Amino acid sequence: MHQMIAQPDQPVVMPDPQDPRLTELVAGVDHTGAAVEVRVPVERALTLYLNAQEIVTMMTINDYPEYLALGYLLNQNMLLADDVVTGVEYDEDLQVVVVRTERNTDYEQKLKKRTQTSGCAQGTAFGDLLEAIEDIALPAAVLRTSWLYALTHKINTTPSLYLEAGAIHGCVLCKEGTPVCYMEDVGRHNAVDKIAGWMYRHGVDPSDKILYTTGRLTSEMTIKTVRMGIPILVSRSGFTAWGVALAREVGLTLVGRARGKRFTALSGQERIIFDQDAASVDEEASRHRRKGAEHDD
View (tube, rainbow, N blue to C red):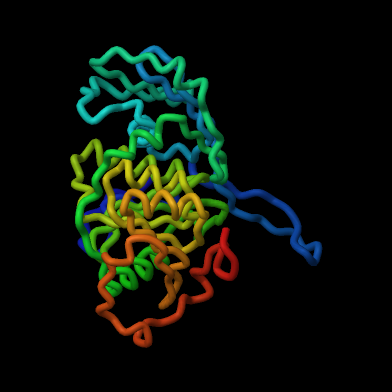
């Protein structure tokens, strides 16, 4: 699972790369024919129910099933802001999580309108999500470049499943230049949903937060960030045209290709305050380069 820590310069929740349930060693050979053992993430199927209705089966590392379930329902507009959650029940043997609410729910028609997203480990989105973000007013906020450089450095040097095994995405909730909640999963949509669930459970104010992701800035990531009420989305990877268009429409600050001293902003540039000389920032160390360091994911 993830480590729970209280040091001020590290996330409250962060990856635990030593957890034996999250990775396993697999034997093989390398390019010379020599025997090797490689640590790889473990995927598990998790089926989510909302009250008595089956919603989706997700492939996940399953370190925080309760947060993932709540965040998924919130970001898919199935769990509403005024809903009262009466329970979240996880059965490890059955690999099932059930979210129960006071409100009676029936999403039979909505579930017929699923769209596979462009994310790895394929997420889903539903037809009414665009309408659900039209009336959301994102809070006023600023992004200082000193915060951007500080948070990307801290994220890249934090112990993680990626550095241990690769083949995984990370999403990090930050306040100013400090990571607050760090989640990883085989798909970035799962990682961000876990953050959404964590924020919901702990009553975290999104208005002064920054969301960082290792994955592409797609329409899905834009919609999820706006649904969470976060005004700034940052990625070390690149953009899709629809992701940018949606971000501009709703006033989301979108910063991509953030590696070392470099970044590109394609939406919400007016929030950025250039308070640190890029010449004073070190380039990204090769050990911390993820896929996409030379080309976008």
